[in-house]
Length: 202
Image (cartoon, one colour):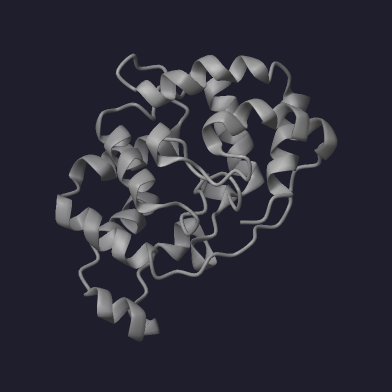
């Protein structure tokens, strides 16, 4: 599968960290899935990796390895990533993270329209885990949200609403989100809170 091959090319990439920093030609093909500067690609449901801390990326790779991120046969890209994650060695993961760590963060373009004022009120409940400025909290396994693409945030919130994420009893942080998603009962609520998060610049 072309997508799977591209992702594998990224995660099996074997240049040294110093090469990442000094040789632009050494950039792996990850941009084909995650976009220029790893800022995300909606066509492939690939998130902005540049804003994510290493601890969270490691945790999500582990989640894919455990089969916690692909609960639905229609989740093609999640299943691709699950296959990739299961093939990775610890060194493969370290190499990928070393590359991601060199990429500059960019502010994503807004694609979802929502009521920012209403979203701010809704976000007050999210702040308990994700922080007042959506900066994330490692102690609570809550990723930063500010700087992530709005379409990806909305997609993941709907995945929780549909129990396509957080469905495994072993996925403690996913289970917490699955239970918390009740605070966003409508599609409009999702758009509103995402619009507010998009207004916060990391």
